Image 1 (cartoon, rainbow, N blue to C red):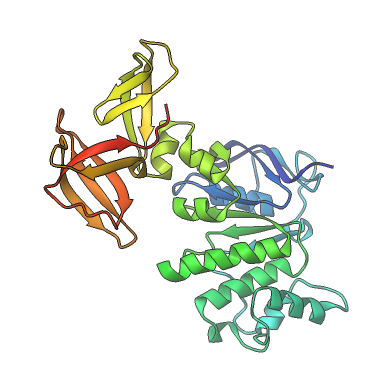
Image 2 (spheres, one colour):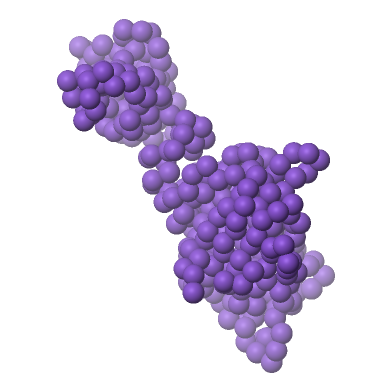
Length: 336
C-alpha cells in the first residue's frame, strides 16, 4: 500500500485556451496537512476541485487510497470518492439544524452517535439544535468541518477556509482547525493565497505558479531555501544580492557572507529582512531612513553608506531604533 492518500499525475485542465493546470502532479502523504498556496489564478482551487471530482480534466489521473478515481477509463463521482469538502462559503443548509447539516452525508443506525461525536470533536457539543444563522462565523466554519468529517473520509479538502474571517479570528481559527484535523487523524489538503497562513498551518507546503507546483517541502525549508527567485519573493520579502566568492567569503553592500565556494564564483545571495541585524552605533556606516512599528516587531528601512541603496530589516520592537540613527549591520543568515 502506498504511503500517499492522494496521488495526482500529469493533470491538465484548460479553460478557453488557457491552461489552469499544466501537467499538475502531487502526492499527499498519509496523515499530513498539506497547503496549496499561490497567487490568484495559479490553479490551486482547480486542483482541489479535480481531486474532489467537481472538475473535468483534459488528461491525467487521480488515485485515492491506491484506488483510481480518475483516469482514461474511470471518473468516480464526488460522493463516492470518500472525500470531505469544506467550501469557502461553508455551504451550510440554512433551513435545517446544525445536527442535520453535520449528519447530511452519514448513513446507518449510528448516525446520531456520529453527529454527537464530531460535534464534540469540533467543540460544538450542545449546538446541534441551533440553526446556521444563530452561529458566529467561526462556529459555522467548525460546523462545515464537522460535516466534512462525519462520514469518515479518507481526506478532507478545504478551499480558502479562513478568508471570510477578520484577522484576529482567522489566526485563532487556523490554530483550532489544525488541532481538530490532527485530533481526527485525517489527511487534509488546504488551499490558500495567504503565504503566512500556509506556512503556519501546514506540515507540507506546495507552492503553485501558472498551473504547476514549483516547490514542495516543509514550511521552513521552502521559506529558507526557495527553489527560484519567484518563490523567494512570493513567500516573503527577500533581498537578492549579486556577489563573487573571494578568500572564503562573498563581499556584499551590507557585509561579508562566509562561503566554501571557489574564488571567482559568481553567485546570487538571498537575505530575508529578519536575517539582517542593525545595531545603533555612533560609528555605524549606514543610516535609518524609515521605521514601521507593529507592536511585536518593527520594520526598519536603512540607506546603505556606499551605494545609497535601501534595505529593510525586521527586528524586535524591544530594539530602540529611530529615523536618523546610524547603524552597523550584521548578516545573521543568507542563502547562496
